[in-house]
Image 1 (tube, rainbow, N blue to C red):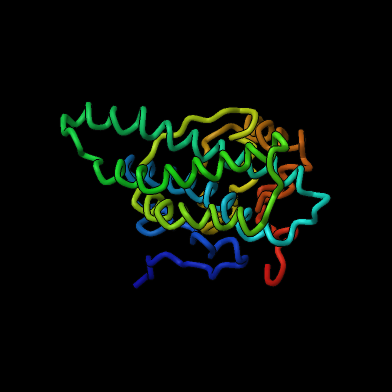
Image 2: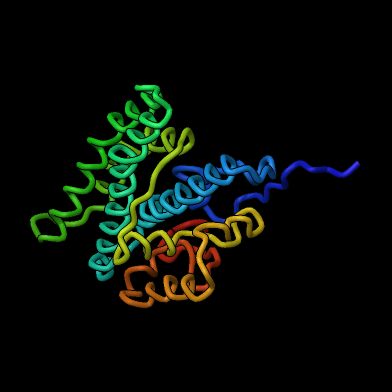
Length: 236
């Protein structure tokens, strides 16, 4: 009798495990092809791109040379913008629309509670990053990680629980997501994210060549393959 259980490869890189572990897609677990499984899987893949971006910042922060701080800061700000844009779309568009269509007010009350748990911490991290960008503050690896520690646990719970809507900006949000979308995750099943033609996908990947000194901090190269982090200290 064939074994239909999903095969899970052990993590190859530390950014797949910590501080937020990557999320298996429902499709990889069940191989179901209904619209709900597909939609949930696509959301999990977006979550994973954001997780990779945050993990790569958290792991790298203590090891980035001072001379590279300006580019690393641009990467951090892009990741923050991607995260806040995503969460804003979820709170303002997706959740109200789902409750309207189902006729069940408060259907995603737990989701709203998650937002309250991490929104202050994410805002504080973003304000601190902005103060550095405007030269009102200096980058501190310890401060960066301390501020992230304030919201990462609640955000991890939210991502694992979650359904979400996505609103992407082409100049920053898409490149930082592409720089952290592993096309070989779960044996390549994640290639369904996002569903784009070969030409469009090629174009989006090559957007990463603009300001490539910033996107070099991503966990994935322009070829869509996972890679060892630059400036990651011990491990991979």
